Length: 124
Image (cartoon, rainbow, N blue to C red; front, top):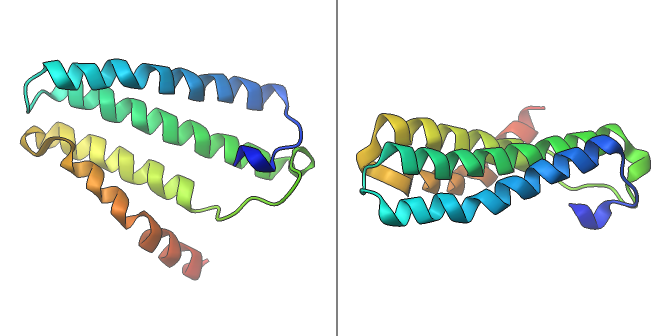
C-alpha cells in the first residue's frame, strides 16, 4: 500500500507509528505462545490481539489515504481485503478465547479473506 503514497499527513504518521508498535510487540506475544500452555487464553489473546491491532491500523491508514487522494501517487487496489482480514482476525480472537483448545488454528479463517471480499464487492 505504501508504494502508492506520495505524501503524508499527521494522522497517517500517528497511525503508522501505532502500526509499527503493534509489529514490534508481535515477537513478544509469539514468545509467550512458545512458553505457555497449548490452551493458554492469555498468550493466544495477546498474539491474536496484536495481529488484530496491526490489521485494523493498516485498514484505517488505507481508509485515510482513500479519503485524501492527494496523498497518493497512484490508486490503491481492492478496498475490501483489509477490513475482511481485520474482521476475520477479530473473529479468530473471539473464537480462540471461547475455545482455547483449538488455539491458533482459528487463524486459518484468513483463508476465507479473498472469497468473502469478492462476495462483498459483488453485493456493492
